[in-house]
View 1: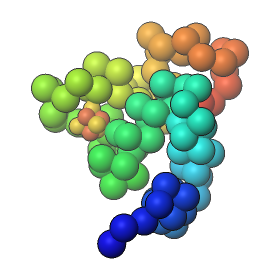
View 2: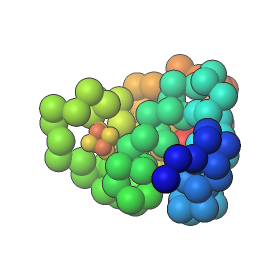
View 3: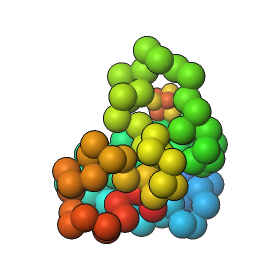
View 4: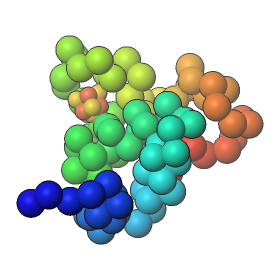
Length: 93
Ligand code: SF4
């Protein structure tokens, strides 16, 4: 199957829980590395944020910056909280 980018994006959006669509769309714009990491980790773990928090792939290059490490459930990690957006703004969902 040979899909163009718009078709691939539409297919991904169909496959993910709707609540993660905004983060994915932000990632697609290429202006938020946090949104890119969060979307990649969520997709990697079948869109289960608890599984991202419990990731066991210590060698993954995203491991240290993966979302949901702080237990807040926001996808905004403590040490990266102020990296993008005002404090308190959820960038992970
Ligand atoms: S850090 Fe873990 S959850 Fe994130 S992409 Fe890597 S293996 Fe997947």
